[in-house]
Length: 275
Ligand SMILES: C[S@@+](CC[C@H](N)C(=O)[O-])C[C@H]1O[C@@H](n2cnc3c(N)ncnc32)[C@H](O)[C@@H]1O
Image 1 (cartoon, rainbow, N blue to C red):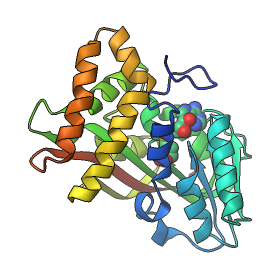
Image 2: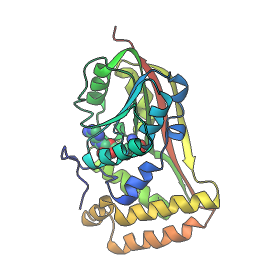
Image 3: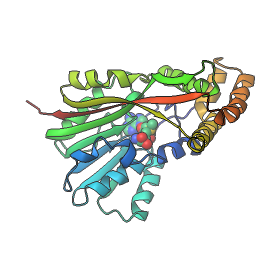
Image 4: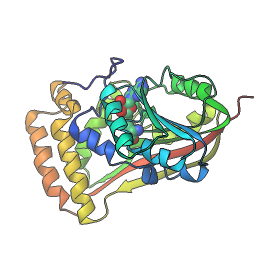
């Protein structure tokens, strides 16, 4: 069974508890660290494709006399995000269900538009950039952090963790996504009319045995629960046996410091002057 959005596109990560747990482990301090120095207390920030909102609430905390708005296509994610903001007592944080292809906001309504692993859902992110430009005030800032699957580093070849990421990459490609968008991000942002002020790739890995155990546990849960794995079996990309082998090898690799697993993200910060 595939995880389908309410706009009928397949969303490869899906909304299983494992996938949502992965998103919820993200924070503004880590995943939007490159944006934080640019935020002033009274700014209005939009987080597009906010998922369960753990980054958005952190952004709201940095703009206490402004506001942070999170938007996601999936109502279930917005429900989780609203509950998070409510229990954190945040009064300047709102969430809306909607599509990044048709943002439900007036022109020039935000100082900042942020997005984390959202552009990679689109083979052509230009329609998203067009909407972002419309809702951004002149001189406003955009900040995106996106994966680059092909630039991620797994070794030695044939590791189970590599099988997880390469199956997910293939599923994203198969569903009109852009899993290697990271390396193209500064160019795409520039071609869309933004002035790039800062860009960098970053390797993210679990360096200690403890961090590794947590990361592998999360990936094993994803492998068991996510629709993209069942779809891969159905499509003949892997057999049921291979699926089971990857799961048991993940358990062994978790404790094997010789196996490297590092994902690559690219961060871009840019400004938009309408003229
Ligand atoms: C990989 S998750 C990232 C969530 C969050 N930004 C984070 O990093 O934790 C991508 C999110 O984009 C949402 N999404 C996908 N297509 C969308 C669209 N057309 N409009 C709005 N959100 C969308 C999904 O529902 C999902 O919650």
